Structures are given as C-alpha cells and as structure tokens.
Image (cartoon, rainbow, N blue to C red; front, side, top):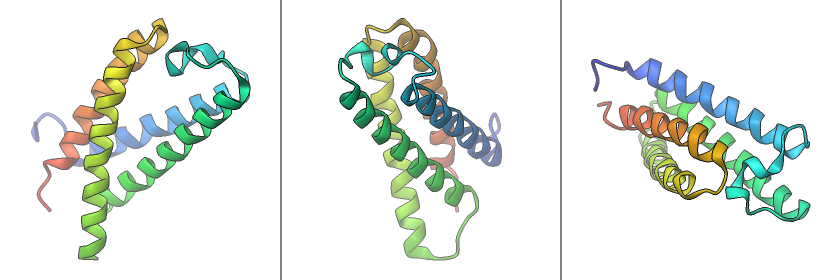
Length: 132
C-alpha cells in the first residue's frame, strides 16, 4: 500500500475531495443543486435539509482540519494522539457512509458517492498505516 500511494499524495487527495464535498454541500444548501441527490432522498422539509447540510459541512471542515494537521506533522505528542484518533474516526465515518450510500434510494449517491467513499477509506487508511 505504501508503495502504491505516497503519504503526501493520500493526504492531498483527501483534502481535495473534502473541499469538493464542502462545495457540493454548499450548492445543495443554496438550492443550486437538487436536494434529493443527498441523504438517501429522505429529506422532505427545508429545515431538515438545512440541519443535515450544516452538519455535513461542519464534519467535512473538521475532517479537513484533521487531515491538514496529520500530513503537516506536529511536534506536540498529546496533539498527535487526538489527530490520530480523528483519522480513525474519519475512516469509520466514511466506511459507514459507504454502507449508507449503497442502501440509498438516490442513484447519484449509489453510483457516484459510493466510489468516492471507497477512495476516501483507502486514502485515509494510507494515512493510518504511516509510522510517525
């Protein structure tokens, strides 16, 4: 795995994908993209959409920050522990997201976001296995 994907490439790829996901959620939130593309097509009120999208954006920004700190190693040992725990949480989150996408009624979630979730899990795993 380490030979296939470099640590920095994995980190930069995760950052790019997270930025694109944030932009996507902002476009959903502003109504520029249809809201039935997300959340398994289960959103039926604007308030529910607003809540879900804001949570998705906050989580994505948090994951973006964790990834940036992870690839730009810090010398604070206690901080490294939190970042490493955050990376593991990210991997579990995107694995569960992958399962949710597979069960979605939305074709877009099934056929576009499932591969993205698979890629993210693989890239995050690459960060996890790096010895510091």
